Image (cartoon, rainbow, N blue to C red; front, side):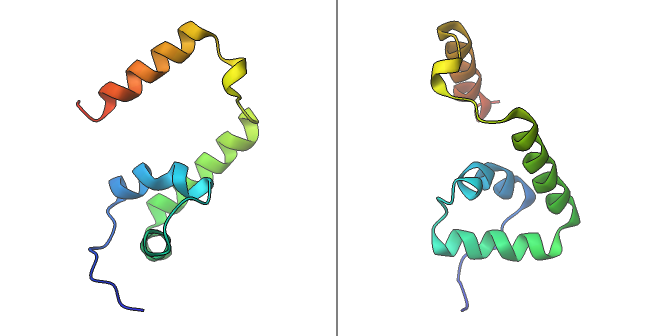
Length: 83
């Protein structure tokens, strides 16, 4: 299956990693993700590190976060793409 979409960059992959872990990538995005992973050792290492972090941290629920911490996280992520 040939796609007209450009190849993913490492930064693109990092931005998609949450959707990847949640199984929320479109078939096209999943194919591009897999193609990048097949040839990028750095992103393989990054994905392994993310898996290890998820295993170490367990599942963080919304209820387990204080309202102040939740507000700080949301503010940090809102400003992330701006910087």
